[in-house]
Length: 272
Image (tube, rainbow, N blue to C red; front, side):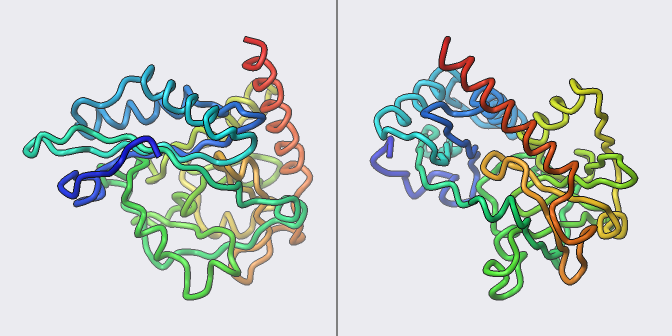
């Protein structure tokens, strides 16, 4: 930990008024750290944070934490509280780490998902930001469902697909790759953006738009993404298999391309 305590009157404690980013470490290097910090800083401005730490400060804290804890391939969480202007409490920064929860079997077999009984409010002022307010996501799984389903899918108030409880969604129909657009009520994931840009450089267009659950269930392939998952195949939604119920060929190619991208950027950072 980088601080002794978080004051009880800090709005991060009292109201969940805080921001966080989750990153994956590859050979001691935080992947896409700059993109994660840019998103966090942009959210801090939009959500009215005061005295927010600078990008340089956050970069130094993350780098020092990784080195001091000798991290090699773990996941880290960087959190910044709002503080309290009335109580003159400045924002607090803290960092934790844990093992990456995904293994080889998840990528070989794919995961099952379930549809949340709750809806994402695409008009909410916080829906596009990675805030401490995650209770809705936690409560979305049915009782005992976390042992069965690897992810939970949210629809928005209009009935269109929004996102997973901890990931962004992509699916394939007629060889076209689709993903919900940001205005459907989702967190614009750093990994999501990286995948879209990576495919664009290879001449493969990802269509962003309004997607229905029926279209998703009838898709040929499906996968979800976040910083820890990378590209993780989805093979079932509830009792409905996706395609032939196994990770699809295009998904496997995207998975491989993303991992090559990680290795290329890791080597570049290691040499700089």
